[in-house]
Image (tube, rainbow, N blue to C red; front, side, top):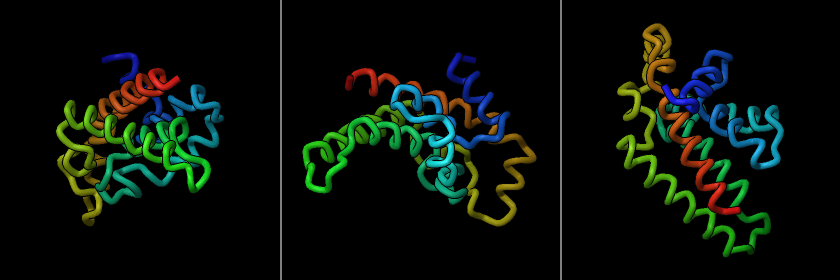
Length: 149
């Protein structure tokens, strides 16, 4: 288990979701306090609100990249395009390693279906599979944030 995976596992053990774990791991680099990072990412776990869509770890990483590279003014098209470019790069790197950015594909379960969330919890699916995705997303995001400084 890598240091990233150990840290990701600790986040899960402490009750944070995948998106929170990734954004909290990047919060210091971004000048964002951990409490705010946790609140921002709180609804993105389980493939965005447990729908099985975009992996929360991916969403957390994209939030971090947006914080550093995104636009603040609505007409700042250069920054907006830079953020999209960074997001595309991240998605390509994550997909190359994992095959998908979709939670239901990564877990092999559709959390939006009745009873599946409970089954995933009972079978420790989140604890067994998600730390790898959280660790990878955080590692890729950290490298990309460092490249952009």
